[in-house]
Amino acid sequence: MPRSLAIVCALVALAGPLPMSGAAPSIRFHHFHFQVGEPAAALNLGMTALNGTRVLLRGLGVGVRVGAEYALFDRIAASVIGSSRSSTEAAYTAAGGWLRAHGVEVSEEAGGARASLAATFGAEVLDHVAFTAADTAAVIAILRAHGAQPLRVTDDSAFFRVEEATVVEIVRDLDAPDAFWCPMHLDVRSAAPGNCPVCSMDLVPIPPPRLGEYRMDVAVTPGARGAGASKLRLTMRDPEHGRPVPAFATIHERLLHLFIVDRSLDYFRHVHPEPAGDGVFELKQEVPPGAYVLIADFLPHGGRTQMLQRAIVTPGYRGTLFPPAPHLAPDASVEKTEGGVRVRLDTAELKAGKAAVFRFTLTDVSAGAPVSDLEPFLGASGHMLLVNADLTEADHVHPEEPATRGPSITFQPLMPAAGLYKLWFQFQRHGVVVTIPFVVSVQAP
Image 1 (cartoon, one colour):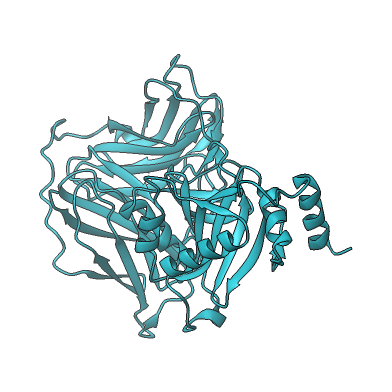
Image 2: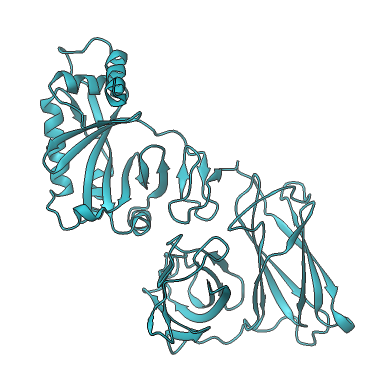
Protein backbone atom coordinates (compact mmCIF):
# COMPACT_ATOMS: atom_id res chain seq x y z
CA MET A 1 0.00 0.00 0.00
CA PRO A 2 1.43 3.49 -0.83
CA ARG A 3 2.65 5.42 2.24
CA SER A 4 0.28 8.37 1.67
CA LEU A 5 -2.78 6.08 1.44
CA ALA A 6 -1.69 4.22 4.57
CA ILE A 7 -1.45 7.50 6.50
CA VAL A 8 -4.92 8.57 5.34
CA CYS A 9 -6.34 5.19 6.41
CA ALA A 10 -4.69 5.59 9.80
CA LEU A 11 -6.17 9.08 10.18
CA VAL A 12 -9.63 7.76 9.34
CA ALA A 13 -9.23 4.95 11.86
CA LEU A 14 -8.13 7.38 14.57
CA ALA A 15 -11.12 9.59 13.88
CA GLY A 16 -13.62 6.80 14.67
CA PRO A 17 -17.18 6.94 13.34
CA LEU A 18 -17.79 9.96 11.13
CA PRO A 19 -20.00 12.63 12.68
CA MET A 20 -22.34 12.95 9.68
CA SER A 21 -25.03 14.60 11.79
CA GLY A 22 -24.99 17.18 14.54
CA ALA A 23 -22.57 20.11 14.82
CA ALA A 24 -19.89 20.37 12.18
CA PRO A 25 -16.29 20.19 13.47
CA SER A 26 -14.55 23.57 13.75
CA ILE A 27 -11.08 24.54 12.63
CA ARG A 28 -9.14 27.81 12.84
CA PHE A 29 -6.74 29.62 10.54
CA HIS A 30 -3.12 28.62 11.16
CA HIS A 31 -0.90 30.13 8.45
CA PHE A 32 -0.39 31.46 4.95
CA HIS A 33 2.46 29.76 3.10
CA PHE A 34 4.17 32.03 0.55
CA GLN A 35 6.85 31.63 -2.07
CA VAL A 36 9.15 34.68 -1.96
CA GLY A 37 12.29 35.89 -3.68
CA GLU A 38 14.30 36.22 -0.47
CA PRO A 39 12.98 34.41 2.64
CA ALA A 40 15.35 36.32 4.98
CA ALA A 41 13.89 39.66 3.83
CA ALA A 42 10.34 38.37 4.35
CA LEU A 43 11.25 37.18 7.86
CA ASN A 44 12.64 40.59 8.75
CA LEU A 45 9.61 42.37 7.30
CA GLY A 46 7.29 40.30 9.47
CA MET A 47 9.45 40.98 12.50
CA THR A 48 9.58 44.76 12.02
CA ALA A 49 6.19 45.54 10.42
CA LEU A 50 4.10 43.18 12.56
CA ASN A 51 6.28 42.86 15.68
CA GLY A 52 6.44 39.14 14.91
CA THR A 53 8.76 36.42 16.13
CA ARG A 54 10.84 34.50 13.59
CA VAL A 55 10.19 30.80 14.05
CA LEU A 56 11.08 27.39 12.72
CA LEU A 57 8.11 24.98 12.71
CA ARG A 58 9.15 21.35 12.48
CA GLY A 59 7.78 19.76 9.34
CA LEU A 60 6.30 23.02 8.04
CA GLY A 61 9.08 25.54 7.45
CA VAL A 62 10.35 28.95 8.56
CA GLY A 63 8.36 32.11 9.04
CA VAL A 64 7.02 34.67 11.47
CA ARG A 65 4.53 34.19 14.29
CA VAL A 66 2.09 36.96 15.21
CA GLY A 67 -0.02 35.88 18.15
CA ALA A 68 -1.07 32.30 17.40
CA GLU A 69 -0.96 32.69 13.59
CA TYR A 70 1.86 32.49 11.07
CA ALA A 71 3.20 33.40 7.68
CA LEU A 72 5.66 30.77 6.38
CA PHE A 73 8.07 31.19 3.48
CA ASP A 74 9.84 29.15 0.82
CA ARG A 75 12.11 30.50 -1.90
CA ILE A 76 10.07 31.01 -5.04
CA ALA A 77 10.24 28.32 -7.71
CA ALA A 78 11.13 29.37 -11.25
CA SER A 79 8.01 27.63 -12.55
CA VAL A 80 5.65 30.00 -10.72
CA ILE A 81 7.35 33.32 -11.50
CA GLY A 82 4.96 35.39 -13.58
CA SER A 83 2.08 32.91 -13.26
CA SER A 84 -1.44 34.14 -12.51
CA ARG A 85 -2.73 33.75 -8.96
CA SER A 86 -5.59 34.83 -6.74
CA SER A 87 -5.13 37.35 -3.95
CA THR A 88 -4.37 36.15 -0.44
CA GLU A 89 -7.73 37.34 0.93
CA ALA A 90 -9.61 35.84 -2.02
CA ALA A 91 -7.85 32.51 -1.47
CA TYR A 92 -8.75 32.57 2.22
CA THR A 93 -12.39 33.31 1.41
CA ALA A 94 -12.50 30.53 -1.19
CA ALA A 95 -10.91 28.11 1.27
CA GLY A 96 -13.45 28.93 3.96
CA GLY A 97 -16.38 28.46 1.58
CA TRP A 98 -15.00 25.12 0.37
CA LEU A 99 -14.49 23.85 3.91
CA ARG A 100 -18.03 24.75 4.95
CA ALA A 101 -19.40 23.08 1.84
CA HIS A 102 -17.56 19.93 2.91
CA GLY A 103 -18.93 19.81 6.45
CA VAL A 104 -16.27 21.79 8.35
CA GLU A 105 -16.78 25.17 10.04
CA VAL A 106 -14.06 27.85 10.15
CA SER A 107 -13.75 29.64 13.49
CA GLU A 108 -12.93 33.35 13.17
CA GLU A 109 -10.84 34.33 16.20
CA ALA A 110 -11.26 37.88 17.43
CA GLY A 111 -8.02 39.85 17.41
CA GLY A 112 -6.26 37.40 15.11
CA ALA A 113 -3.42 38.48 12.85
CA ARG A 114 -4.69 36.87 9.64
CA ALA A 115 -5.79 40.13 8.00
CA SER A 116 -2.48 41.84 8.88
CA LEU A 117 -0.48 38.90 7.51
CA ALA A 118 -2.51 38.98 4.29
CA ALA A 119 -2.03 42.74 3.90
CA THR A 120 1.71 42.66 4.65
CA PHE A 121 2.55 39.79 2.29
CA GLY A 122 -0.31 40.12 -0.20
CA ALA A 123 2.07 40.89 -3.06
CA GLU A 124 3.89 37.56 -2.64
CA VAL A 125 2.98 34.26 -4.32
CA LEU A 126 0.59 32.36 -2.05
CA ASP A 127 1.29 28.63 -2.10
CA HIS A 128 -1.53 27.53 0.22
CA VAL A 129 -3.73 28.43 3.19
CA ALA A 130 -3.47 26.26 6.32
CA PHE A 131 -5.98 25.51 9.08
CA THR A 132 -5.68 23.50 12.28
CA ALA A 133 -7.98 21.84 14.81
CA ALA A 134 -7.80 19.95 18.07
CA ASP A 135 -8.53 16.74 16.13
CA THR A 136 -7.18 17.13 12.61
CA ALA A 137 -7.59 13.41 11.90
CA ALA A 138 -11.35 13.72 12.33
CA VAL A 139 -11.44 16.82 10.10
CA ILE A 140 -9.55 15.04 7.31
CA ALA A 141 -11.87 12.05 7.61
CA ILE A 142 -14.95 14.29 7.25
CA LEU A 143 -13.51 16.01 4.17
CA ARG A 144 -12.94 12.62 2.59
CA ALA A 145 -16.45 11.52 3.51
CA HIS A 146 -17.74 14.58 1.60
CA GLY A 147 -15.86 13.51 -1.52
CA ALA A 148 -12.63 15.51 -1.13
CA GLN A 149 -9.47 13.63 -2.10
CA PRO A 150 -6.13 14.84 -0.71
CA LEU A 151 -3.43 15.97 -3.12
CA ARG A 152 -0.70 15.00 -0.68
CA VAL A 153 -0.49 13.59 2.83
CA THR A 154 2.40 13.91 5.32
CA ASP A 155 2.82 12.84 8.91
CA ASP A 156 1.66 16.30 10.03
CA SER A 157 -0.85 17.46 7.39
CA ALA A 158 -2.99 16.82 4.32
CA PHE A 159 -3.41 19.07 1.25
CA PHE A 160 -6.66 19.56 -0.71
CA ARG A 161 -7.25 21.57 -3.88
CA VAL A 162 -10.08 24.08 -3.52
CA GLU A 163 -9.89 25.60 -6.98
CA GLU A 164 -7.24 25.93 -9.66
CA ALA A 165 -5.23 28.57 -7.79
CA THR A 166 -6.07 27.70 -4.17
CA VAL A 167 -4.84 24.83 -1.99
CA VAL A 168 -5.88 24.15 1.62
CA GLU A 169 -3.66 22.40 4.17
CA ILE A 170 -5.13 20.77 7.28
CA VAL A 171 -2.20 20.76 9.69
CA ARG A 172 -1.66 19.21 13.07
CA ASP A 173 -1.33 21.90 15.74
CA LEU A 174 2.40 22.29 16.38
CA ASP A 175 2.23 25.20 18.82
CA ALA A 176 4.51 23.63 21.41
CA PRO A 177 6.39 25.99 23.74
CA ASP A 178 9.58 27.56 22.37
CA ALA A 179 12.56 25.59 23.65
CA PHE A 180 15.37 26.54 21.23
CA TRP A 181 16.66 29.79 19.76
CA CYS A 182 19.49 31.12 17.61
CA PRO A 183 22.39 32.53 19.67
CA MET A 184 22.87 35.27 17.05
CA HIS A 185 19.18 36.05 16.41
CA LEU A 186 17.37 35.59 19.71
CA ASP A 187 13.97 36.21 18.11
CA VAL A 188 14.38 33.05 15.99
CA ARG A 189 12.74 30.34 18.09
CA SER A 190 11.53 26.79 17.74
CA ALA A 191 9.98 24.02 19.77
CA ALA A 192 12.53 21.56 18.32
CA PRO A 193 16.22 21.63 17.26
CA GLY A 194 17.07 22.95 13.80
CA ASN A 195 19.01 25.65 11.97
CA CYS A 196 18.48 29.40 12.01
CA PRO A 197 16.80 30.51 8.76
CA VAL A 198 18.78 33.78 8.89
CA CYS A 199 22.38 32.72 9.58
CA SER A 200 22.17 28.87 9.41
CA MET A 201 23.61 28.41 12.91
CA ASP A 202 22.39 25.49 15.02
CA LEU A 203 19.57 26.44 17.36
CA VAL A 204 20.52 25.99 21.02
CA PRO A 205 18.35 25.40 24.12
CA ILE A 206 16.83 28.57 25.57
CA PRO A 207 18.50 29.03 28.96
CA PRO A 208 16.51 29.77 32.12
CA PRO A 209 16.38 33.41 33.22
CA ARG A 210 19.45 34.43 35.16
CA LEU A 211 19.93 37.61 37.17
CA GLY A 212 23.12 39.63 36.95
CA GLU A 213 25.77 40.05 34.28
CA TYR A 214 28.77 38.01 33.27
CA ARG A 215 32.13 39.59 34.02
CA MET A 216 35.42 39.59 32.13
CA ASP A 217 38.71 39.93 34.05
CA VAL A 218 41.79 40.89 32.01
CA ALA A 219 45.48 40.40 32.84
CA VAL A 220 48.08 42.12 30.62
CA THR A 221 51.60 40.77 30.07
CA PRO A 222 53.98 43.63 29.12
CA GLY A 223 55.70 43.50 25.78
CA ALA A 224 59.36 43.86 24.88
CA ARG A 225 61.16 46.47 27.01
CA GLY A 226 57.99 46.92 29.03
CA ALA A 227 56.09 48.70 26.25
CA GLY A 228 52.68 47.58 25.02
CA ALA A 229 51.38 44.07 25.62
CA SER A 230 52.60 40.68 24.45
CA LYS A 231 49.75 38.62 25.90
CA LEU A 232 46.20 39.11 27.16
CA ARG A 233 44.64 36.66 29.59
CA LEU A 234 40.85 36.83 29.81
CA THR A 235 38.73 35.12 32.48
CA MET A 236 34.93 34.92 31.99
CA ARG A 237 32.99 34.75 35.25
CA ASP A 238 29.47 33.56 36.01
CA PRO A 239 27.04 36.26 37.25
CA GLU A 240 25.60 34.11 40.03
CA HIS A 241 28.73 33.08 41.93
CA GLY A 242 31.57 34.88 40.15
CA ARG A 243 33.17 31.56 39.27
CA PRO A 244 34.91 30.95 35.93
CA VAL A 245 32.49 29.85 33.22
CA PRO A 246 33.00 26.08 32.74
CA ALA A 247 31.93 25.66 29.11
CA PHE A 248 31.27 27.68 25.95
CA ALA A 249 29.36 27.06 22.73
CA THR A 250 30.92 27.59 19.31
CA ILE A 251 29.70 30.72 17.52
CA HIS A 252 30.84 31.09 13.93
CA GLU A 253 33.65 28.55 14.31
CA ARG A 254 35.14 30.05 17.50
CA LEU A 255 34.45 29.92 21.23
CA LEU A 256 35.37 33.58 21.65
CA HIS A 257 35.47 36.54 19.26
CA LEU A 258 37.52 39.43 20.65
CA PHE A 259 37.65 42.94 19.21
CA ILE A 260 40.41 45.31 20.29
CA VAL A 261 39.56 48.97 19.59
CA ASP A 262 41.51 51.99 20.79
CA ARG A 263 39.88 55.13 22.15
CA SER A 264 40.54 57.07 18.95
CA LEU A 265 38.78 54.34 16.91
CA ASP A 266 41.83 54.07 14.65
CA TYR A 267 43.17 50.72 15.91
CA PHE A 268 40.98 47.70 15.20
CA ARG A 269 41.65 43.98 15.54
CA HIS A 270 39.23 41.01 15.30
CA VAL A 271 41.05 38.12 16.96
CA HIS A 272 40.31 34.79 18.63
CA PRO A 273 42.08 33.95 21.90
CA GLU A 274 42.73 30.29 22.59
CA PRO A 275 40.92 28.52 25.45
CA ALA A 276 43.16 27.67 28.38
CA GLY A 277 40.55 25.93 30.56
CA ASP A 278 38.53 27.06 33.59
CA GLY A 279 36.88 29.94 31.75
CA VAL A 280 40.26 31.37 30.69
CA PHE A 281 41.36 32.47 27.20
CA GLU A 282 44.81 33.64 26.14
CA LEU A 283 45.82 35.87 23.23
CA LYS A 284 49.51 35.98 22.37
CA GLN A 285 49.73 39.07 20.21
CA GLU A 286 51.61 42.36 20.33
CA VAL A 287 49.38 45.29 21.22
CA PRO A 288 51.01 48.77 21.09
CA PRO A 289 51.02 51.13 24.09
CA GLY A 290 47.61 52.75 24.36
CA ALA A 291 44.14 52.90 25.89
CA TYR A 292 41.79 50.26 24.51
CA VAL A 293 38.38 48.73 24.92
CA LEU A 294 38.16 44.94 24.63
CA ILE A 295 34.83 43.68 23.28
CA ALA A 296 34.26 39.95 23.82
CA ASP A 297 31.50 38.02 22.04
CA PHE A 298 30.78 34.52 23.40
CA LEU A 299 27.98 32.12 24.35
CA PRO A 300 28.31 30.38 27.73
CA HIS A 301 26.52 27.04 28.04
CA GLY A 302 23.29 27.64 29.92
CA GLY A 303 23.42 31.38 29.27
CA ARG A 304 22.67 33.97 26.61
CA THR A 305 25.00 35.44 24.01
CA GLN A 306 27.33 37.93 25.70
CA MET A 307 28.97 41.13 24.45
CA LEU A 308 31.27 42.16 27.30
CA GLN A 309 33.43 45.28 27.28
CA ARG A 310 36.48 46.02 29.39
CA ALA A 311 38.79 49.04 29.21
CA ILE A 312 42.54 48.41 29.52
CA VAL A 313 45.73 50.45 29.33
CA THR A 314 48.86 48.77 28.01
CA PRO A 315 52.31 49.61 29.46
CA GLY A 316 54.10 52.60 27.96
CA TYR A 317 51.00 54.67 27.34
CA ARG A 318 51.53 58.32 28.27
CA GLY A 319 48.19 59.86 27.32
CA THR A 320 45.21 60.75 29.46
CA LEU A 321 43.20 57.94 31.00
CA PHE A 322 39.93 59.72 30.20
CA PRO A 323 40.30 60.98 26.63
CA PRO A 324 37.36 62.77 25.00
CA ALA A 325 35.36 60.87 22.42
CA PRO A 326 37.00 61.14 19.00
CA HIS A 327 35.60 63.64 16.54
CA LEU A 328 33.83 61.59 13.89
CA ALA A 329 32.31 62.81 10.65
CA PRO A 330 30.16 60.76 8.26
CA ASP A 331 32.15 59.60 5.23
CA ALA A 332 31.96 61.97 2.27
CA SER A 333 31.93 58.97 -0.08
CA VAL A 334 29.88 55.82 0.20
CA GLU A 335 32.54 53.92 -1.79
CA LYS A 336 35.95 52.74 -0.61
CA THR A 337 38.56 50.50 -2.20
CA GLU A 338 40.73 47.94 -0.42
CA GLY A 339 42.39 44.69 -1.53
CA GLY A 340 41.41 45.21 -5.15
CA VAL A 341 37.71 45.45 -4.25
CA ARG A 342 35.53 48.55 -4.42
CA VAL A 343 32.90 48.50 -1.67
CA ARG A 344 29.77 50.63 -1.82
CA LEU A 345 27.69 51.12 1.32
CA ASP A 346 23.99 51.83 0.92
CA THR A 347 21.83 52.50 3.96
CA ALA A 348 18.18 53.31 4.42
CA GLU A 349 17.32 56.14 6.80
CA LEU A 350 19.07 55.35 10.09
CA LYS A 351 16.83 55.93 13.11
CA ALA A 352 17.52 55.23 16.78
CA GLY A 353 15.51 52.33 18.15
CA LYS A 354 14.91 50.89 14.67
CA ALA A 355 16.47 48.03 12.72
CA ALA A 356 18.79 49.50 10.10
CA VAL A 357 19.75 48.12 6.69
CA PHE A 358 23.43 48.19 5.72
CA ARG A 359 23.97 46.81 2.21
CA PHE A 360 27.55 46.42 0.97
CA THR A 361 28.01 45.89 -2.78
CA LEU A 362 31.41 44.58 -3.93
CA THR A 363 33.03 45.16 -7.33
CA ASP A 364 36.35 43.79 -8.59
CA VAL A 365 38.42 46.86 -9.46
CA SER A 366 40.58 45.29 -12.16
CA ALA A 367 37.76 43.46 -13.94
CA GLY A 368 35.08 46.07 -13.30
CA ALA A 369 32.66 43.21 -12.58
CA PRO A 370 30.58 42.30 -9.52
CA VAL A 371 32.42 40.08 -7.05
CA SER A 372 31.02 36.53 -7.05
CA ASP A 373 33.83 34.56 -5.40
CA LEU A 374 33.69 35.53 -1.73
CA GLU A 375 34.89 32.83 0.64
CA PRO A 376 33.34 31.90 4.00
CA PHE A 377 34.93 33.92 6.78
CA LEU A 378 34.41 32.36 10.20
CA GLY A 379 31.24 30.62 9.08
CA ALA A 380 29.67 33.67 7.42
CA SER A 381 29.93 35.68 4.22
CA GLY A 382 31.03 38.68 6.27
CA HIS A 383 31.22 40.27 9.71
CA MET A 384 30.57 43.78 10.96
CA LEU A 385 31.42 45.48 14.25
CA LEU A 386 29.49 48.65 14.97
CA VAL A 387 30.41 51.05 17.83
CA ASN A 388 29.38 54.55 18.84
CA ALA A 389 31.89 57.36 19.33
CA ASP A 390 32.49 56.84 23.05
CA LEU A 391 32.49 53.02 22.83
CA THR A 392 29.53 52.62 25.17
CA GLU A 393 27.56 50.72 22.50
CA ALA A 394 28.89 47.82 20.43
CA ASP A 395 27.30 45.19 18.20
CA HIS A 396 28.88 42.27 16.36
CA VAL A 397 26.54 41.66 13.42
CA HIS A 398 26.27 38.84 10.90
CA PRO A 399 24.75 38.95 7.40
CA GLU A 400 21.16 38.25 6.46
CA GLU A 401 22.46 36.14 3.53
CA PRO A 402 24.16 33.18 5.26
CA ALA A 403 25.95 31.70 2.23
CA THR A 404 26.23 34.39 -0.45
CA ARG A 405 29.40 34.64 -2.56
CA GLY A 406 28.59 38.22 -3.52
CA PRO A 407 28.23 40.79 -4.78
CA SER A 408 25.91 42.07 -2.00
CA ILE A 409 26.04 41.47 1.76
CA THR A 410 23.30 42.86 4.01
CA PHE A 411 23.32 43.51 7.76
CA GLN A 412 20.31 44.61 9.81
CA PRO A 413 21.42 45.73 13.29
CA LEU A 414 19.19 47.51 15.77
CA MET A 415 20.47 51.07 16.25
CA PRO A 416 20.37 51.74 20.02
CA ALA A 417 20.68 55.54 20.10
CA ALA A 418 21.19 58.62 17.97
CA GLY A 419 24.71 59.82 17.13
CA LEU A 420 27.74 58.96 15.05
CA TYR A 421 28.90 55.36 14.70
CA LYS A 422 31.98 53.73 13.22
CA LEU A 423 31.77 50.30 11.66
CA TRP A 424 34.29 47.82 10.34
CA PHE A 425 33.09 45.55 7.53
CA GLN A 426 35.10 42.36 6.96
CA PHE A 427 35.02 39.76 4.20
CA GLN A 428 37.38 37.14 2.78
CA ARG A 429 38.51 36.69 -0.82
CA HIS A 430 41.42 34.68 -2.26
CA GLY A 431 42.38 33.66 1.29
CA VAL A 432 42.77 37.28 2.46
CA VAL A 433 40.53 38.99 5.03
CA VAL A 434 39.74 42.58 4.02
CA THR A 435 38.60 45.19 6.59
CA ILE A 436 36.95 48.44 5.51
CA PRO A 437 35.73 51.12 7.96
CA PHE A 438 32.83 53.55 7.49
CA VAL A 439 31.32 56.30 9.65
CA VAL A 440 27.53 56.77 9.66
CA SER A 441 25.07 59.08 11.39
CA VAL A 442 21.97 57.82 13.21
CA GLN A 443 19.08 60.25 13.68
CA ALA A 444 16.82 60.58 16.69
CA PRO A 445 13.45 58.83 16.35
